[in-house]
Image (cartoon, one colour):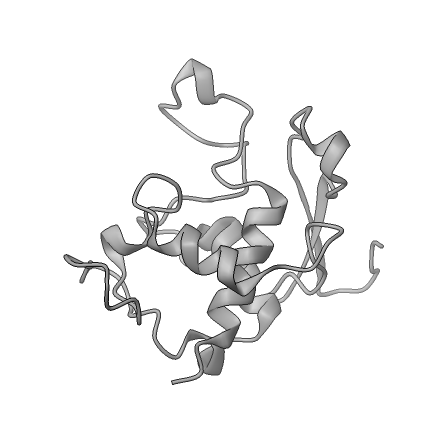
Length: 149
């Protein structure tokens, strides 16, 4: 659903072929500092999201962030702690930060996990592909939303 209004901005994203099976949208509505609507048709799963955040081959979140995942050693200190993320930001705000944090902070070193346009130095095998799928973004958002302390 596309919402009209002065705060609504469309963020067009390239749609990989795999999306046709998964059902996410290829146009995302950004309202202010948030993406209020989910990217995927199924709700995010916090347990899967925690696994993505902890996985150093998928999300790479702990490369820069620290978080309440005590079994993972050597957590990052370059970015804010993920602890309390669900208390600091709404689900929509968390979603935008994962999709494309540069929309909020153009100087961020955090990669856009769900944007394929305007990128530089992308290996050919990754051109036109997002880092995370729509479902994975929703899983990470679901996990981060549980972090209230």
